Image (tube, rainbow, N blue to C red):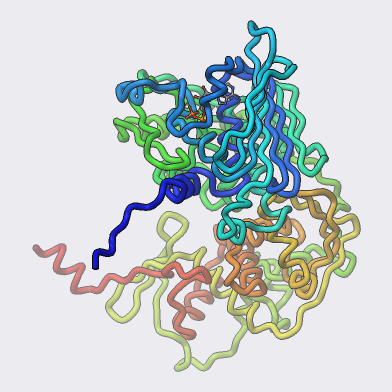
Length: 568
Ligand code: ADP
Ligand code: MG
């Protein structure tokens, strides 16, 4: 019996709709992109019930005349391209004519629209793919799309969605990126009746500062032009960085993209300037004539292909080099540091400076802690000579790698990774932890997703010794911490934990890893000879191979290998 049959059109339509419209956030993205394509100067977005009850997008853009409105929800109905060649000279965000058709298929959709020059507006209503009415209606200028009962006819899709709060968080994340793609226009965003963002229109820097609560003085700006490209960089300096790259946005011809290869490349370049500090927040904008890019790659149009990729890579490289040119760095050195009141982090239970940094590698700290077996890099262990690992520390390469001779091998050891691992092992062995209280508390700012993660794990955090108050929808106030977390690192560590956390990981262990990493980073550059020897001792004695995150600690070169290379 033949097994293949052609799917009925309703099923085909639903499958196609699912590719474009994944969740409420994707509806909002498509609608807002249409508003931007209609050259809106004002966009208002309202979501209710996580977007499943209602999504409303109004814009004051050019509107549609009745003939266009009547057919705009048909599949492949678009005013933006008319022939294949147009795909290579796109200047609009949309081009496939699929978005409204997909939404119309899986919701009750109403579009009101009026062109300025028309006398009246028109209203089109479509319910789950069927046009139910089309009639004149009084309407101001522009277009308003309302989506109700989203996915009501697709129960399988509904089952995959998160809570209202979760869907709203995703929607707001998407809106942030869209707002940053057009900072010059006015935006009003309401979730469940409450204003989430309200932006009168202004500069990109001011909008970044508004969305991420970072003072404008922290941003470094650079524009370069290398035909056919123009690059604009606006990034926070090394004094305001994050443990994740989620506040970094890429725009190509004003289209927000999330392209893995572009992101990876840029992260690699950033490391030259930010080292292990973390990632900046900010914007990377590339502008080029449309024939040099292809956006017709991904169903939701997140990805981009450059026709001459290598040129774009070197453009980014040059842009960063100029951003951090000598002149700018001098300027950076004079940046006002974040206001820090001395009492802010004062732990009530600790008194001296040394106790505030109980695991310091600083020689002074180590000397005073001789008797204390808990000092994390305390090397006062009385090993018998035969128990000591046999190795010779030859020196340090590039202030980062220890050169070690051992049994006819040369080892290059990553000292930061090793310190991280040794501290991590010590923390893990510690059986009891104290809690340090902070007099005034410490603010931690999260993305919407980070905040949702916090809500999921807040009991565990409390159990670990944190006392946390929710200050706002994305801000926490910490007023007690486990004693091994230095208060000045609290924001970083919690951001790292909540923004990068994978549900299957153990939170307590991730906290130790993140803490170990921060402690090691701070002190890693200034290790004394004794400390270096102690770390190596631990590595050989305990057979440590990787850092807590699994990266290798060393690279070994045998004497034979050296001889082979040099004698050939
Ligand atoms: P696409 O954006 O790929 O063309 P859509 O399904 O998103 O496809 O929209 C179909 C058409 O409807 C658009 O090409 C445009 O002509 C019209 N349209 C949609 N939204 C708006 C809007 N907010 N303002 C004016 N016209 C719109
Ligand atoms: Mg569109």
